[in-house]
Image 1 (cartoon, rainbow, N blue to C red):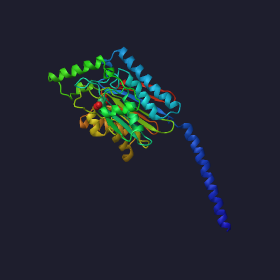
Image 2: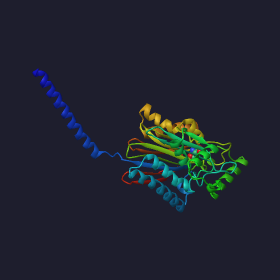
Image 3: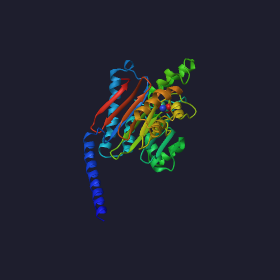
Image 4: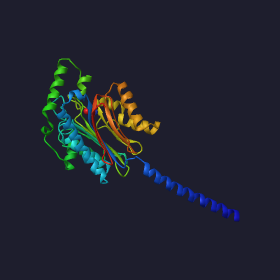
Length: 347
Ligand code: ASP
């Protein structure tokens, strides 16, 4: 009996001792941890973005737009909002800007239309929504969000998606709203090159001038990841072509266990490589870090297939990666203390 009692006392002491220790450890960890409480990053497309082909004024314009967009998401996160809301509202700013190939300023199809693709994913629930080939929905990322939240489906396309958008009370605009002089000129240039057999549809030089998709990934204070992507696709696309941007796993992926990713680049290859999901899978099944997984996929696996482009991604600890194999990528990050980084070129 006596020995049973002393055993009990010893166990109790050990238990308490362990408790005190772990509490101390916790406070030490808390004080020294660099882990951001929340973070957000964006891209505005990858391609031939070089210092020597960009004027100071243009660069300033892009900087201003990228900063405006990321600050919107940052404030949502700072006020305790969700990563999903931050991603959606940040992308709205980029969609409304004529500078990027999403929403207003989207590239033209062969037939002279602007057709939009978008997707969004919630890392907590693995819920996702996407829309493809719409011509009248002002903010395609809002449609993707509505598909996720308000429909039993994951992806809607074309006129059906537009009917759903109207039913949901989303803003509908005339197709001409999206048109810009600059993107019309790009279409003419690409068509002329192809007619003169200077280049094929998939010529690398021309492809570089076709990119410009926007995307966002974020970690919120609740520990939830989300990602979203919106695009007009690729200049001179035909036959109802749909790229990677609305495809969950290719253009967008988010999973609280691993990371949130948004892609930009030559869509056909991102689809074949399941780029966004591949990065998550390499982390989940192979134990790679986000940095290692992104590097492997963008610098090795994608070019081996013949594709080019880039990704932005964030993991559950707030580590952020911006990996691209093109000459540049419009990008920005913001951490919880308000640290802002904006980049365009390879630097
Ligand atoms: N990935 C997009 C697409 O292929 C294009 C881009 O990122 O600019 O539709």
